[in-house]
Image (cartoon, rainbow, N blue to C red; front, side, top):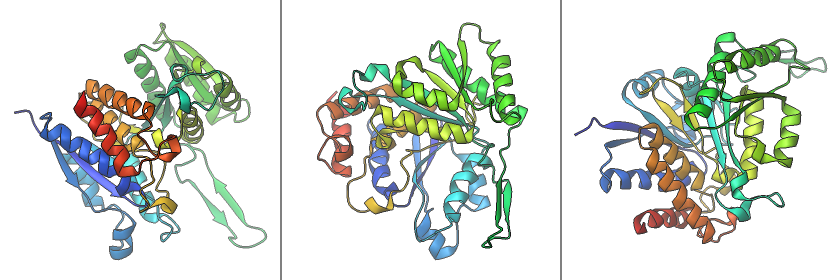
Length: 357
């Protein structure tokens, strides 16, 4: 028997538990019916525990996850009862930075023609992967406030880019393109206005590209890239960027594929097999939808597919994607993507597609 692959499950807040439930059922099916060596470990982390015990992500538990687990499947975190989102920061940034998951991989591959919000475009025109730097940049929490609350208040957020951090995520983008036989990598930067950190990004991008002569390297200012991404999404295959720009570009790409409810993500220490990774849908906790059986579970299911691929089962990711595509075509889905099913029923529809095939 192969060694068990331990997966930590963190349903989180808001709609997180609702969307993660079908993804957990999917993993249980793979464990029980397809005999994959998965060990599922449910963790009580989120706003409820934080409000009850003052616990976000304890250091000891974070180290245990890092030591014992191959993956984490996260629903969503964020709750208006914790207005400063302290617990969410502890959980999300605690894992991204604590596990050094420097590559946030956000695929945006359309599965259904009718969901494309652009005229004269089809699903085949939108197959983009955004690789976003995940541990530095504007989200490094460097800065502060002076004279808070006064008319003279000053607030400073600093953008941090290191040669080491930039080079490794740029190289990850080119490696992904090579692995998936993609022919172009775009850089989204703003080096014309930000002449220090962003100049570093463009210079390193061009230097690293020399090691991948078969792949076209195309630097573009981020505002122009967003403009052209809407006009002609088919020109984009892989986009690499810093933390802030990558966050924005990946949400735009998600809209082009049919919405955030369909969007999966992987947080990886690229190039280190066996390193713990975190997988999550990117729609957030959406507290206004919590408990209403309306949230779209497909982003969570696609995230589970990315997880299985990272564990060495890429063919199962393909099966899951095809099952979701068939469910979308049959409108066996939630209302945000043109169906009338609730969260539970939409998740069950995908599982039934897998069983029938």
